[in-house]
Length: 394
Image 1 (cartoon, rainbow, N blue to C red):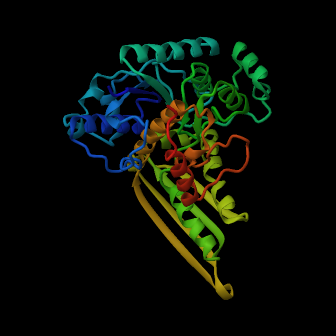
Image 2: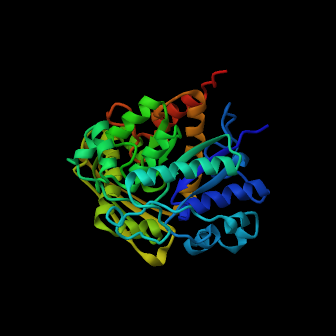
């Protein structure tokens, strides 16, 4: 009998989550194929089938997921009547919310105040999800809006003991993303962070995951502009074309864009997008400029525009211009699904702690020892392939 995998999503009513759920439900109904899913053509021992995935999760909106999906405009009545109708019957669980950490995103569907109380409720939700849906295993995936970066010198971030004291004292520097990560790790549940928010990558939680042998991965899903950078920059390096400057602009109008309209949340996002080029090229690109603009008319149809200034043979100057017109959630949803499947596979294999093999999916891949991550796409793909080819212990 096939094993059932539950994916508990933080921000389940968001555009990425509702798109992922709709896609999986349509696969089950036979109205969607496996196009766009990076691992669909791989026969990987022990990995959950797409048809055996069940979704649930938390959101600050209490609207059913069909209503949420319609509001985001990525999918509509066509999909909801063609296999994705289950979204209309799915309601989010009350979520942890904090406008202090995410200024532009709020809602009435909130759980109890207090850090320890929230952790307890999250873990109760996970257990109820497992029991009610008859699941064999569960993973937690953060698809919520971007939070501000916590203070670098916050006392609660120094070590495990300080973090536990911070939880006891409801330290305001401990964000919702961290509470979910702690709850998942403490419940021996794999955790993936698809957002730029600081969560399981904070030192006390990374240490906690390693101690308990719980797989974690993150952060910030690599979908559009940064994906293209990690493909193109290695080619420029290998052809000895020096990058003098790389100017990047993004416009988007979905809820992610709204969250990033807050300067503190935006800074978290820019932090994950900005480290890629220097590692790949082997030198600091002095004029690497990244801009993100919230532009409501565009909705989920994001536009990423890049201008690259190059120096080649005999000092000759050149330019490369890229214009990626993409659908943000259509790119992100398949990656979120694959991250969940890979984290579940890691748990089955007993591969706990930071899973660097999943770096392919993230803008700022978390590493186990705090070293600079690999960013080049081909190198990341090879690392993932080697891991996937391993066999599950009997």
